[in-house]
Image 1 (cartoon, rainbow, N blue to C red):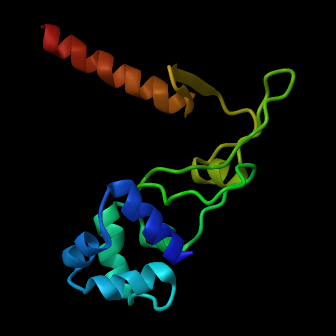
Image 2: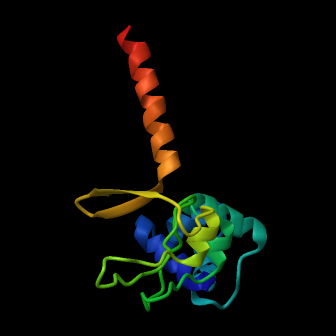
Image 3: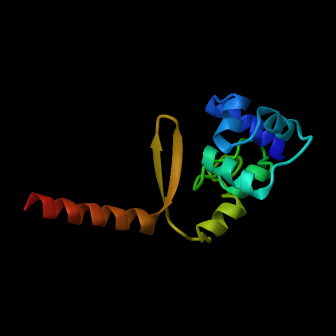
Length: 145
């Protein structure tokens, strides 16, 4: 819900209610009513809040509770997603959530590159990864000459 997202985002960003209210041109009391769910902001104020927090308007007003996590998640920054959890099979297989497959146009048989750092792994379509490597190699060759 919007009220939960407002409180969560404000706390994540380390703002007081008064600081948020000042940034969008309202009273602290009006903002407090939004966080408590007594009233809701108009679309213009929602847009300002989404901009302030760097999230989409849609994610600001909807509750994100992903499959398998069992908790209310904060809205993801624009262009970022939390797809939920998957279970690794005994053979190391996972099922990529349908919304993610649809967004990235993934289908059975597609090749993915697995990337990682200390905190986790990422899957990138092989064609995208290979094209980026070719582009970098071409740029490097031009710089060396």
